Length: 154
Image (cartoon, rainbow, N blue to C red; front, side, top):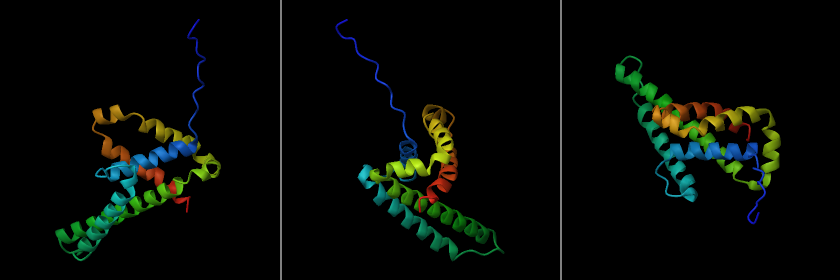
């Protein structure tokens, strides 16, 4: 009787919170060399520069008549895709970092709530992904599903 405590009602995370957590996870996966959360944008911008350098390098060697030329064209397209994905993720992170717009984002993403909840539920299954060595495939799929939602922030 002495230490009876009321069960605290667990506050359900809002769509905004789930989305912020997913965007941060993608950024941390894309830029594992960051030192702290305040350093993530610097690391992400550095990664963008590296993708641009890869684009410039492989663009010069694109030639459909040789095998290495075809490889260069594919590498150029991959570098462009990765650059665009990371750029969109960074822009989404910057938009979502404004806590004062929480209600606006919750209202804006009400039609994507179920999709975001499913992505977050799968994101929580870290141990299973690591056990099956699916980390890279999971984050690629997460980016493919998350980026169309983030592009709506612009």
